[in-house]
Image 1: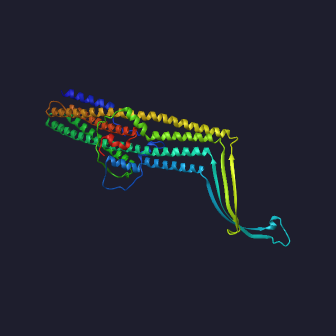
Image 2: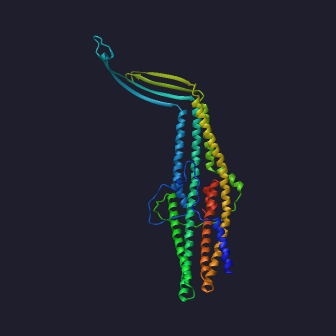
Image 3: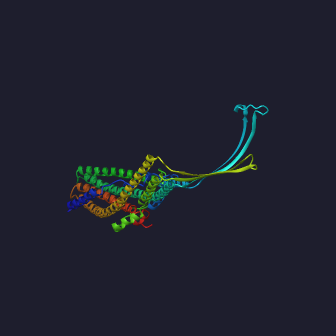
Length: 469
């Protein structure tokens, strides 16, 4: 009976080991122009406190949205794009300059070749005042107009990218938080295993001293206890390192200790309508919309390159007053119109057009790939959710079964029916089952976060995780 239960527990643990091996935090996607490391850092806010900072998942995400480096960098990119748009607008507007000048001169005539009898060799000092304003305006410049349109689309793309960066911060910080929660569950499980191993060791020592068990049983129990002690050291070290990673993402000082207040959430996710999810993603994904704007910008640049062949009509006006003083002055005005036509710039114009067309093709290819990638991300997340839910169910059943096997093995050993080899094997099965449960819960929740990001609804992460806001 006991051997059959051990075999079943081992089979369940082996199955979970094959499909749900422990992994570090999953690789997160990035926004255009940003690297994955951008979202792993932050701008530190506040000072270290002696009291650990209590963090819920909502608190951690809120801090990340305010301090994460990815948010900061995406904001600066948006500001730069806005600056480019404003600068490009100037080419379509008149340029008005004003100047005021007062001149004083004295001339030495002999140095200029004039030596006249009766005339002083120097003239002056004399001077004049010149105050004027000038206006220059390209009245018809289609190339500059298209460049401004391109800058406007680039600014729109930058704003969409910044919105997408917020979703990536939610995904990244949420993943890091869930990983720490998973680590805490792992530590708790190993501590429970250590307590069980201590009981088994005490029992083996007592039986050996009483002469009812060989020394081998005691040695085996000591090896198991020491092995679990090593696992506990590793689990605690991983927990502290993942806490540091979370702290770096949300703007807390690295030396600040934290205390997570949320446990691992688990709610079955049954909304698996693939077509509806894909449609939602196509409508709401900001990175997809940003690429659409970038394609419009590239096409406008291509039109600007074509428009460089067209004439440019410009006007210039200069008006001012000049005289000895402002009261003794007279107005002057110059006005000119200019029509510029490129005659022999074929290689330059053709090169500009080819480079612009290459950029259009490049962005178009990226957009086509992004559309397929968005659909793939939605399908991947739904598959991961479905698989993880099944793994959680199997893992929970495996934990119950392994604990029952361990209890029976301990009772048989206590009654002297068998040695403690079965106890050792049962303890290993319990450890493996606990590991698989912790990992499967983590994978399930990260898959739901990934789905929220994939459909462009990362801000509604609580709806997907099954938490109450």
